[in-house]
Image (cartoon, rainbow, N blue to C red; front, side):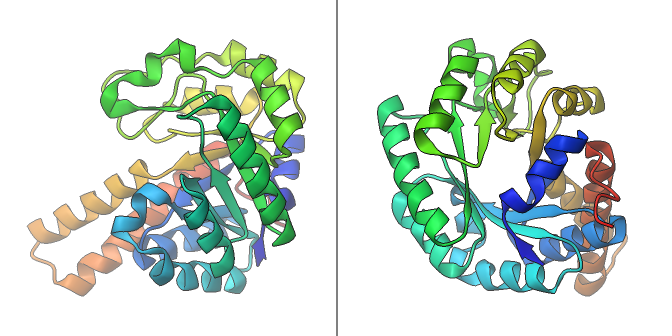
Length: 279
C-alpha cells in the first residue's frame, strides 16, 4: 500500500527501530527490495534521488515505483531523495511520489529555510511528507564526513523544524554519501542531544558501509530512517560478476541480481529492527 513518512516513522520512533530508504533506480532493484519487505513483513521506503536520474529518468521509473507500492502487501513510501531543485521536486509530486526530501543544506542557510518552507506547504497540499536537512552530510569520496563545522547542532535542528514544518529531519553526525575511504567517526552524543530536543523523526544519510554497531547505536539514539544505496549496488554488481564468470546468460544473471539485492535488503531490515513490524 502506498503511504507517506508520517504513516510509518512515528511507530518506528515509538518502538525504537528504523525504516530503510532503499533507492531503486531500476526495476531489478525495485523487485528485490519489495520482495524483501513482503517476506519480512516490514514497512519500506523506495525511491530515487536527483543525482541518480541519469541512471533512471524520473518519468520512466516513477510509474513502476508507484504501481509496486500500491500493489504491495506492506506499507511502502515512494520518496524523492535529495531534491536539489524546486522544479524536480514539483515533478516528483505531480508524478505521484508520496514523499520527498528537499536538500538545500549545501547552500545559504536562510535560503534553505525559505525553500524548504515553501516546498512543505505544497507537498502537504498533495498529501505528501517532506524531509529536510540542516547541517551538511558530506561525500565520502571527498573525505568531508570529517568536516565538523558541517555537523548539525541541537539548536539548529529545533529551529529548522519549527520554521519549516518538515516531517522528518536529516542530520549530519559524521556520515557521508558513497563508499567510505576510512572508518567514519560518528558523533553519537550529538545525535542523542538532537533526539532529546526534538520529537521529529531523524534520518541518517550515508548508511552504506557503516558497521552493525554504528547502525544499532544511531537507531538507539533516535534515528528512525536510514538511507541505503551503495550496498545494493555492490550486491547487484557481485551477482553480475559471478554470473559472467560462470558463463550464465542475461536472464539468469538478472535473476541472480534481484536475489542478491533482495538478500542485502533483508540483512539491513533485520539489522534496523523493522522486520516483523507489519502485522
